Length: 289
Image (cartoon, rainbow, N blue to C red; front, side, top):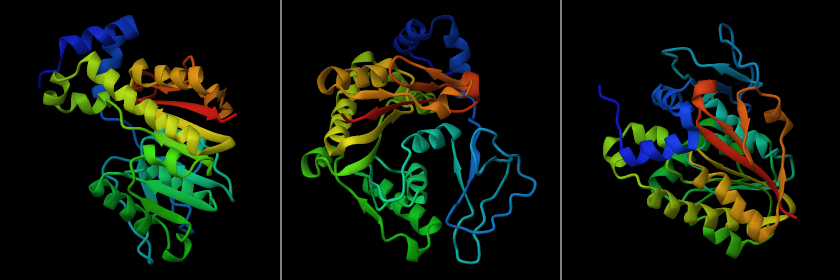
């Protein structure tokens, strides 16, 4: 099969990554490694024969052909995720008693991690009806009915939270829609439409969502901004706009600093598949001051 291409796309990312781009490009097209993350709402999960992921507690590398099974209560024992996504959700450092917002929550893996921290309130928001239905299925298939009263699934445009619920949340996850270059490689028609202008236009919406997250967050609260894009326009440059206008505190996260495959960027962290075998993922940890 011929490798999908777009000269504008190739030229842009060659400028960004230089000699690294051909290798990175190749690994973005490879199937990513995935983990089985133990469902903390299920007791006595059998992990015999599974290879533990050394940098993620309660996570195991997914064997080829592994089939998810439910327990006697109809709950899945494991959730399949990209390891980079687990790191993003854990970077929010949710604690019991927190009020949390997951602004763009589908398909639900990150929201499930937030729920397992037992916050006082969790709003899992997803504007798309179809994706919202999938999100609700995740909660029904992983959390006992008696333990999900604190979870609320909403369908607002994420921009509404900053307007309707200012200074409401201790923790906000803004895992925003992005170009998703891995997905572009899987869809030649979408890749053929890529231009820098399209990415810049998307970055405008991403900044709007991050600004909404900022407004919705309590003073002193924590925001994690993330994308699965490799474009600086959608990552550090979006955070830079917030820095210029709002003067947040950009935090380091020791759990990421200690992992050799996590690369520090100007304002955040990047996980790329040529060094890790999974991702790509970008995230920045922000405190509202």
